[in-house]
Image 1 (spheres, rainbow, N blue to C red):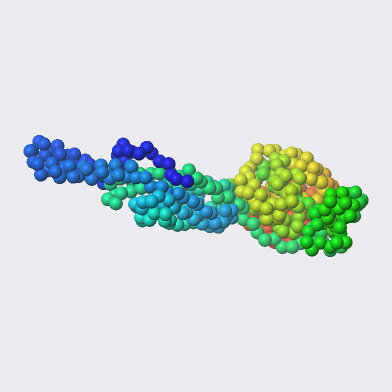
Image 2: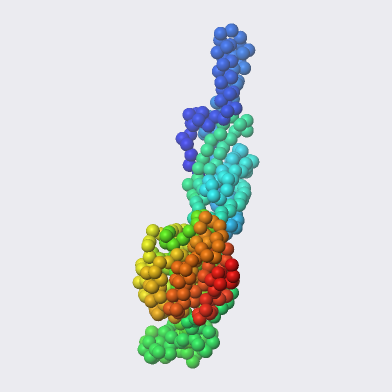
Length: 440
């Protein structure tokens, strides 16, 4: 795509005069006036030369017909918070004349760093130049990159004109994903060894799942009745294991979190949800992300047959832009949980009141397994670690009631390591102890 800029002509060129160009023009006009007043013909010639140089540069530059195309490539397209990404720019001269000096400037948000600027020397006809720069953000989100601005300059630095390309890209910065240790979770039944649930086991002959014959299929799996009906070989899709389902519930209530910025309890919860989702997907779970607002990703119907990597990308993209909600409770998430049926539920929760704790306790009976990472948000207050007594009796009481209801409760304080906490997720009878019990 070629750049679109200001209207061509002398007026456009005069607008682009640099300080040097304006100084030459002013000096030339002054010399012309002085030559008229003093009657000095030599001074008149000098004045005309001084004034003509910036005017000629402006006129020439304004009527330049460079045909330049640009392209941008991100590596990677989805970056992790705190890690660098590289942006590759390519400028092609698609005209039959060489370009002059080109100055490139790409527009980037301030959180990604300063605006990158490059100086490109003459580009031959049909030639190209490639440059790259790095961006980095500690804050997750979606950041626009571009449009690319092209600045044309004459060899004497008298005039500069800007042209802008229309194309832009988006860099998605996702939360950091931590590798979690393998633990056997309560309620896990999917697809392991003899415990595989076969979809064909409860199906009759009319309910068999069929597909077209492919080279290498066992002829013993040919379904002759359907082959005669459709006129082509059809085989049974036997031994289809049902995938275990898992839901990761993320508490986004503003009233449930403390702190601000990357060190807040909410950002820890977002990174935790991202790590758990990716971990469960890698283990073969059909995983979805659910927030207290009732919004599910990728949806109540599951991943729609996408691969684990595809579903992981969709969930991470959603977590890149998730924000605090103004909700007061978790009731809006109950209906999507019921619609999802039984399965593993992993909840990442902030501060709870008595009613919310009671709802979660009742919800336990509808799930195959339930793990809650309960954040002691008081330890994030003021972005500093507080004493163990900050949690108080209320926090311990909430954790105790959830344990009695059958939840595996992992209590979390600021600075805790998620992989270390996750190792206790296979102990339903005794959750990770609250830190005050370990001695303070």
